[in-house]
Length: 83
Image (cartoon, rainbow, N blue to C red; front, side, top):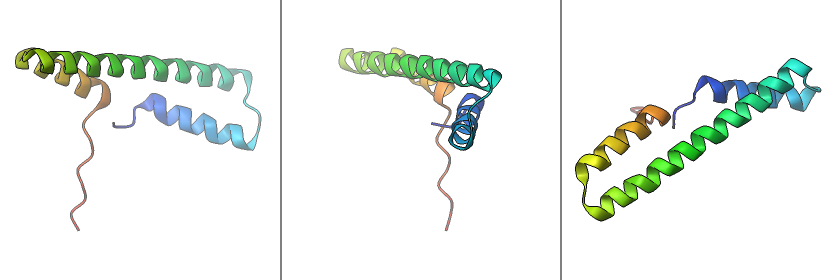
């Protein structure tokens, strides 16, 4: 899964929180980021379940459509560096 801006902000606020208390605005951002993250996780989990169902019913066109939706939500994994 690639990092979304919401995840970068969540990590930033988490780090700030370890050094000092968050301001009211930062706390609102933190709560918003957590809510969006949970929503994305639920959507991806639902799509994985649908993909399994499509696989079990042999509906490859539907499964490919679901996989495209998963890729849109999660991004594509980064390429491995060439050593």
